[in-house]
Image 1: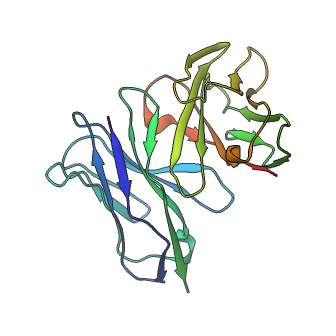
Image 2: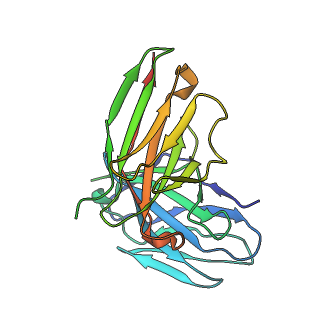
Length: 112
Length: 115
């Protein structure tokens, strides 16, 4: 079945540093891929998504490219801010439903 | 338009007690999903409900756990005779339709601690 493996955290960066959070997946076919973000004290929010191979999802300066060859969907941002401190989850659907399979989450802490 | 509301935010129970977790979906959403996040693990799907119907409970433990989404009122996740292993964060999500993951909205979760 579908699964996702996510880079373990925590990741601690200084402001304006470059961020990469790795995510690889195993799936039947080519499902949509998602990154969700959970800010402290809040629920998960959809950050970005990609619906097919070679698609690039982007939002709030974050990007992730759906790479079929490497079965990866790594999250990147060129210059992180303190306000980006949160837990980031990679996810994909289980079949054609809203049942999502999540990675374990990566805690990002950005220091001023 | 308020988001998905879950309460309580934190719930402490002693072993053997019952835990009731509530989820009010976003206005206009008739599909509710419950997920559980155990320590050091990702969120795991538990159950999917529409108004008055359980559609998929393949992720629910076979005993002690139940869920409902009545015609009126919030969705309830009930855990009877809680054990320490039930300690986790429980998240609810809602959507206006069956498919379309970009329309899935999550609540802030209920942190259940079993003493």
